[in-house]
Length: 397
Image 1 (cartoon, one colour):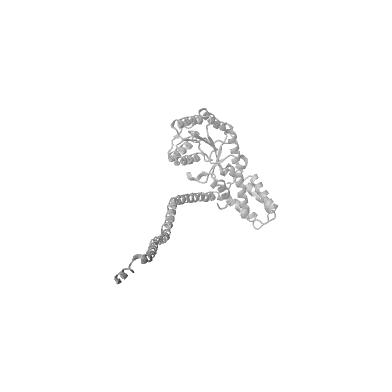
Image 2 (tube, rainbow, N blue to C red):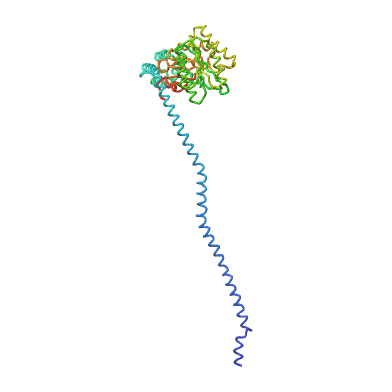
């Protein structure tokens, strides 16, 4: 019986139910064990925190350098242009200094007069009259003188003015009158040869101007031929041949006294056959008041038009600045006789009459292509109205 009792407590009857409810709770704690995976989700945020600082930031910096890399080359090109303008600016500055030096005789004359008139003085009628006389005497022309005086009378009459103010006003007025005739001599590449007929009186510098132009054109890579059309002077032919040797270009010549029109015709035909780009024709010096001699120039033009109706493509009148107002008569006569297309003003460095260009522009309106202030080929330069007017009155660039 006791043995049976020992088996009764162990009997699964009542105790099994009691144990059974305890067994289910055990599985319940086991599901929390799977809850351990949720902690891994919490580490992922930690991994995300580690990743953002490492992955995104480097990604942004690396992208930026790759974009800036292509822009790094552009700065070098930008730096290169910066040097080019610097060198060209230096060249322009050097030329301005030479021009200012060349025009020093003209500017000194003007400045001395202006300083005398306006030294601590009010701008009254007497001062304005003296200024007008000074400008006319400097070959700047009555029109320029009148315009400058009228402008000052309206703006500063009965006030004290400094000489510097007068110079600035004069430069500005002269620039307004002359800048519209500032036109470079352009070569039309469709016309072969582009023919330039150079005319002017004896001693104006025609042959030298032709030689300088030939040197400049050859240095720029163009083919050039010269025609020694001044058949009356053997010295002119020799001088042109010397320039031809310097520029390494052929010179067409004929014996002294030959027909200049026939020489010009032969030179044009030869240049066209050889494909020469530029033909420069020298002519004998003609006094503008000698009708028969001027008729010879007209003959040259007529003969050339038989080969090319548009020839000559440019007619350059070379004027000597030292002749002052006499340049007006030359410009008018040559323009009316053969149709001058542009002016070359030489010897500006040897005269106090450099203002004549202003009066020429005001009166005739003929384009001014080039000016010369020295003996070398580099001393013949395209006309720059602003540099010229400021140099003429002694102002800085």
